[in-house]
Image (cartoon, rainbow, N blue to C red; front, side, top):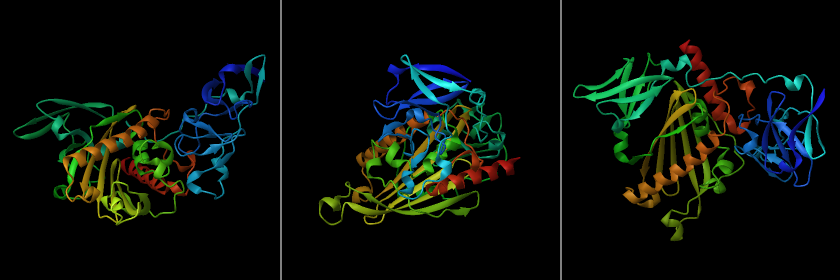
Length: 404
């Protein structure tokens, strides 16, 4: 065993910094402005998000994704989605090596175990062969002309449109257009596209967000969309301050190729004209219905029960390559703000707001180091709020096994 310097004491404060010690990544931080330096494992055990993106609050290190808090010993002292319920023992971090400060330097005492590289966690990545047996979005219909190249599963496909329709090279099992998207199935898909008819769009004002990209795997992108516990911590610039920290128990109902969850929530609705007129209270009821189909088809339907407004978000992920996922988001709006058919300005405002929400998620995803979604439930820590995430992992694991 030996003491190894890892940083100058003057460079260590209450803002977490990442250091590499003995072949592993750690987080070095002071949990009090004048307190001792603390070394903690690099990743939160919940969703493997780097703790270097977190912040110090009340003498604890708070994860940026779901607000889990850890003390100097790595003990998890708070899981916000559980409220005052007991924190599960597995939520804590494994202990790190001893730390001391000598002559203006932070030193770590290493033994043989601390110098061993951490094992890579397996999971579903963007180039997994199982994904050949699925429908994938590959472009907006408006993007495809005489020639258009796309990336999917680490491969390049050439799309073209002519009087005889769409073509793709190399020739896939199937091509389709739905909701203004081009879909491609490299091999016979195990799960069909959503069975809701395209004609349903006619009852709503629809608008696409500009497609965006993230280095996160498509599985994590889907998990992020289904996750309800991160709102107060990731979406602080949009709606997070209004979101409840505690997540009450909810049900997830299995369906062929996926699942559905219906949750009733309270939210503040300042845009409802009935609030200003004194007809309805600011705090109102909302029904949120999540629908998922493997591997990366998602829909969220938000119904404002006191007003009658409906907002549906279609959300699809294209696994382009090992470190790139393209995201497509379409909004279908009805009676927003009590206006019946939304005006172009109302639609533009809703799209801009949803872009801001997505940007907050993408900023978090930029920090990830894991390029797969773990499917073995033992590789992450799950709590009550994660029922949708657990259902996603189980469905994707069944999908992978069926494709084998």
